[in-house]
Image (tube, rainbow, N blue to C red; front, top):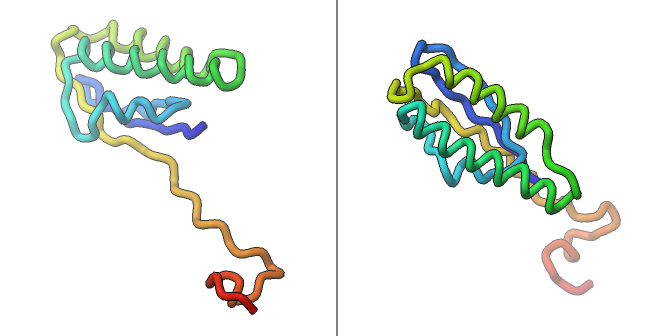
Length: 116
């Protein structure tokens, strides 16, 4: 299951790197986008709960890291006015794996689909 990180800047200017075990966050939040704290929390709450559920569906248990991340964000968000503006600085998507290399025993003709 692909995981990702996202960076946020709280209203006081502090930056935090957050974790999601699923790419669902990129569907809900946009990089370089400002949000009121309450709206950001609505989106991230939904996203991390969906992500934890996806892990449960695949592996049979909830992702404790996603739930811990949500708890930490809830605690931090509670220190700001709900209408205060914060920003999603960046969405860090996983690196794309390079294409699979041809087996060592393959000839150049095999990799091009030609018959010997």
